[in-house]
Image 1 (cartoon, rainbow, N blue to C red):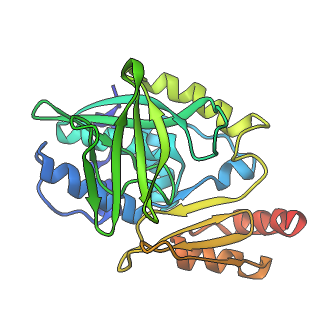
Image 2 (image 1 turned 180 degrees about the horizontal axis):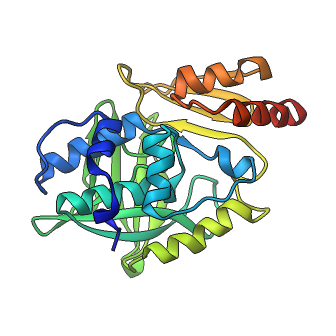
Amino acid sequence: MWSGDALDLDAYLDRIGYAGELVPDLNTLYAVHRAHTAAIPFESIDVLLGRPLALDVKSIEDKLVHSRRGGYCYEQNTLLAAALERIGFTVAGRGARNRTRGDALLPVTHAVLVVTVDGEPWLCDAGFGHQGPREPVPLSRPGAEARQGEWTYGIREEADGVLVLTFLREGAWRDLYAFGPQAAYPVDYVLMNHYSSSHPRSAFIGQLVAHRPAVPGADHRISLVRDEFTRLHPDGRTERRRVPPEELIPVLDREFGIRLSERDAGELVRMYRAEY
């Protein structure tokens, strides 16, 4: 399903810094998920630059693994799915509806994974940005809290089998996204990717987006949307500052681990200066 046999697993494991066991159990699932979200940043720079985004495993591997770039949900979770499938996990896709924008009804454009271990389903998602989970979230116990360091997630069940991922911030539960029981396949992600990378209403069109849900050696999360850099702390504190054009490439490198070619960096800075 996820072309795990086409993945250079050793190169992927080196990219995420994982040297543990490769058995399809819960400990491995947690460890690989944590390592992936800590090592590979979320970013949609190619969308901003008008570059096509191929979702075959080899293209994603070349970009996120060998070129040490980041990617957004379809790239991140297709790569994670291929690795988990190669290790021996049972992996299914789902399409999710973003709920972080108030009462607005948004289309199903977010790609997530459901991984089954010993008959129990777990939500795995390496591609939701700085508010996304760093580790798998159990799906078999709606209402239970899932602590991930200083951060807490939950799953709420609604009608028709819809599950909602929630995030505890400043004493209140906030919806992140909702997804139903219907399976999504790689071909569905191709269609969703087309909308996200080209439709004028897509949140990734015309603005820079980069996130990091896990910063090595720290417990905060960071994001850069348009020209605003944000640092989110577990106690609710939020630090914000504007990133001027001359700092853009150093910030992407230093804070997010995103290293662009000279050509891409030059084009990005030119667009950034013109827009912001």
